[in-house]
Length: 216
Ligand SMILES: [Zn+2]
Image (cartoon, rainbow, N blue to C red):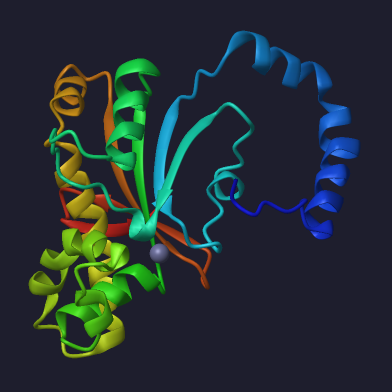
């Protein structure tokens, strides 16, 4: 067995607080969720970054969002090669079993994952180039975002452009999944690209007509 220890006190305390307040006040609701199963309307793919609070931003309750988080909110291309694909599995389940109506990719400002990809592509992060770096190999998927924005002189601006481009790369990759493409073409699924400016509290949405992100 791995060396598993009891829950740290601060987590146990927070749980007891939730149980005494949120759960106690909504017992019937939780029982209904347990009995009826989940029927989320939307899937959200966001970054693992602890500052991105998807349920809070959209005021979502339990059962409403099917959320998948990974480094830099990346969707890899469709690759049915028998390997372990956590993100692809989540997308498959959301689209083919839960049949969500909306699939949202949510990027964000000051994304460490995108910065890592940037530094790797600029030759400043040799540790990420190692074959054994899970983060580096994951961020390989976003390399095109560096190439597409290499002409932006200001680094902060270039990173921001890459963060938004990363959302578009994920949306492009989503369309390589046959079941996503089919659902989109059947108009049972819509795709959305968002970018959250953490400090300003702003959400921008990709507008295909303007080919840019616009405030919601
Ligand atoms: Zn991030």
